[in-house]
Image (cartoon, rainbow, N blue to C red):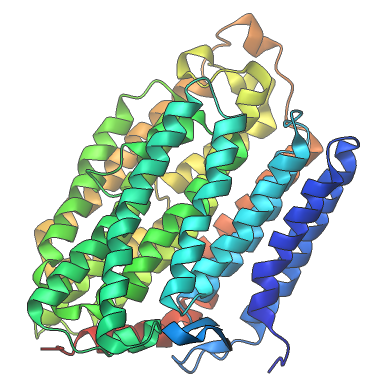
Length: 503
């Protein structure tokens, strides 16, 4: 095992690196760009041992660091990862590199601040996934809003102020309730240790209230229907890098919260209210799919598709209780949670790729309207190949990562109830409909305008980013075993934990 503080390094290296990039200023923008790239690559390199040195035979927390922070309140600087959080940390460090490269030429206005914001956000998001102390988790959770707020507010589109305020208010409102729940549990247990909360005895009313408080915080983050309306606005106004981080990482924090907090802390309440979350997930999967179908803005379409895909994640997580209640079907419970996790990682790659592809078009024509394009394949054949591939992955084509997670969740849903599986499976048809409809109008057909006829194909920088993502989507689609093996024991442990009543 590694004896130096690996997790702290992965948290603080990008934050300190971001501060250095900020100090380097905009006098020589290339210096700040190269520095940002160096920091993001270093962070990714430092995060790799989390995977290579990871012991996948145990569900215990690994790479644990613990130091007293506010001892009089029992608050510690306490970090650790298991099979659920570790893949998400590596996803974060991997995507950040691509965001830095993607904003290289595009961001001409204050590039040092732009890069610094993303690096700091990376550190804070890793902190969210690794924090095992409730106060530390909350600090990172709130700190994450600030760089995102700045990125959308400075480099965003014309309605950016409206989008940032809406994004901030929604997420902030949810987190207030979470804070109240955390403080209540502190008074019950006497510590802020998240793992101690897992074993805390709570009666049914307490569990219900705590569960609802967490649900408000995490549902806004995922976002689940009906608190999803901030996401399309934030995506449309955000610059490409902002959209990528928002879709690829930030939404996953909500899903992660359910696995780390809601389900283990309040298993009985999760069981009692599973119908609520499953209902919200199925509405997201079916209804939001139809909403995506009528969008005229490409970013909006992909934003709505993200909500539908994340509906799969929450469905996979909460279907567990239905399966466990059915004594004949014991084996499918873990499958649902695994499917949800695979879907989270896969959606991280696919949504990042979709937004980067739209970003490539936007950088050239400065329009996101589907109607402005048509016949792009004639002038940008390489780009069109990537775009069609990612769209297929978005629709869940077998062989791509989009299929694996969705298929696992649908299989698990069958164990619970045929109609759940049926409604969940409709997304494959609706998803294919809106994605292919967009591809048909943007990529194929005759050249629609003179502007499209003038388009240049992707340069080496764009090609690099899209190739890396295409490989990630393919590898995870054809060989998901490395990811599933890592989280297998942790998920098994979680399912066992939530199967035991606290009452």
